[in-house]
Image (cartoon, rainbow, N blue to C red; front, top):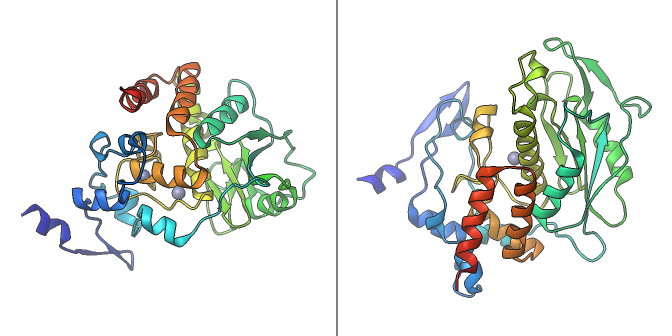
Amino acid sequence: MKTKFATAIAVLVLGGLVIMAFTVPTKKKLVEAIGSVGKLSKTMQLALDPADFLPMNKPGPHDWLANHEEFGQTFDEYVQEGFVSPDKQRKKIYLLPIGPFAKGKSPSKKKLQQFTAAYFGLPVVVLDEIPVSGHSFTTRINAYTKKRQILTHDILKLLRKKLPKDGFCILAITMEDLYPDPDWNFVFGMASLYARVGVFSFARYDPAFFGQARAKNYLDTLLRRSCKVLAHETAHMFGLQHCIYFQCLINGSNHMQESDSRPIHLCPVCLRKLQYNIEFDVVKRYQKLLGFYKQAKMQAEVEWVTARLKKLTAK
Ligand SMILES: [Zn+2]
Ligand SMILES: [Zn+2]
C-alpha cells in the first residue's frame, strides 16, 4: 500500500555518509506542516490551501534530497524554535554590490532591489558599489576556471562592520566568483544568520563564465536565477530552513538544473512562516510581485500570481 511505502525507512550509504532515503510526504504530512489554520483570516486560509501547490517529488540520484538529509521544519516548529524578526529599529534590507554590475552582463541592481522589496515587504536599499581591490579581500585564481575568486570570510567580516543601525541584514551581491576555504573549488554564497550578513555571487549563472554561448534570452534567465538565489538566501535570514514539503523556492538544490526547476514562489508552509515573521498582507504582497513580474516580463510568474490573486480576492 502507498502509505506503508511512505513510512518505510530505507538507508543508503553514499561515500561513507549514511543518508536516510527521502520519502515523498503524504497529504496528511503536508497539512500538518502547514499547521492549524482555523483561527486565520479567510484570505490567509485561501492562501494556504495545499490543493493549489505541487507536493515535493521524488528526487533523482544527483538531486539535493538524495544527497542531503533534511528533516524539514513545519510551521509549528518554526514558531517554537524562534527566529530573528525585523523590528522598528532594524527593518531595512541592505544590498552591497562588490565590483561592477556591467550592463548587458549582469542582473539589474534596480530590478533586484524592486524584487526583494516586493518579496519581503520591507524597504530595500542598494548601497554604492565597492571595488574588489582596496578592501584587503583575499583573492586567488581558480585552477579550473582561471578566474579570480574572493574569500567569502573576508567579505562577511567587512559586512559586520558595515551593517547600518536600521539594517535587518546586509547582503553583498557580486559578479565575482567566491570561495569559502582554500580546499574548496567555489561557493555560490555564504551567510551568517545571527550576524545578519551574507554574500552571494551571480557569476556562475552566466553561461559565458564557463565559456559557453549566451542564449538570446540569457539576461532573463540571469535575472530569474539571481532573484531566486537572493530570495532563497534572504529567507534563511528570517529563520526559514529548507523546505521538503512542496515544490518551493526554499527547497535545497544540488545543481543548476535542479535550482532552475524550482519555482520562485513560496509554498503554503514557507509563505505562512514568512508572513508570521514579517506580518505582511498576502494580497498586497502578491500585487507588488505582480507589478514586478509584469515589468520584468516574467510571463510564467505573471500568470501564477494572477491566479493566486484571483483566488484570494474572489467575492
Ligand atoms: Zn538554502
Ligand atoms: Zn516551502
